[in-house]
Image 1 (cartoon, rainbow, N blue to C red):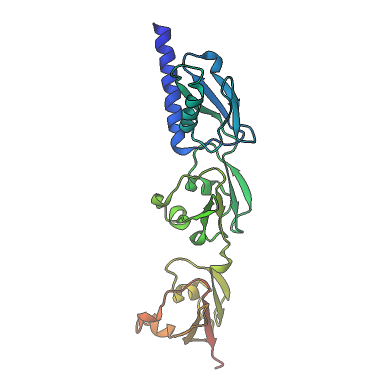
Image 2 (cartoon, rainbow, N blue to C red; image 1 turned 135 degrees about the vertical axis):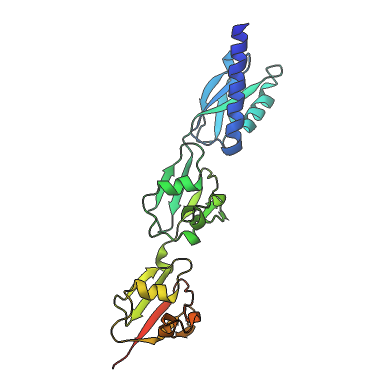
Length: 265
């Protein structure tokens, strides 16, 4: 009696394993599966998914496994084995994952292939990448089955908003574009002319201060912001600093050029 209860418990745990994996994982080439048929030990085997996506079982022959969840594969094997076993109870569990990998491209991070140990979220994957300082997370996205999947990498990774986290799937491609298109340029009569990576909410005064502030001969009331579409905005930053016109401190956009004009006297 004890032995029978133990066998039932093991079978039940195997079923739970199959269901749990079924929600999040699809079997792929190279995976090692444990197939169990209740009461038929000769059909309980460990099999490896071949490159053609199939597994071979005694009596059942070749069965397509790739692309199915363990629960779906259990149902398919049940249908096949009904020809040989009366009311078969089949469970499938994943013993070893070998096809669970994602690809990273786009220039914002070194191109790489990342193997994933089971279910992995986007946030966990980003934490594993070595350097994201040059990645424009606002324009990043996922490519899945040839389709673009929108995900707010910036709010997830920088702001910590986990409502934007998603579960990755095998063969996903993460496109991380470079920050090159996400710069603000500060030139003219400033202490340290430079480019600055755009930040959400950055203003013209923020950019000038990050460039070391006004130079000795700067015309502080003659500052020009040039947009990517060639629009030009003339600003009086000196009036802003003296509290006369706070509207002069406009929000910048990626690609803006801030030009501080210089006085000759």
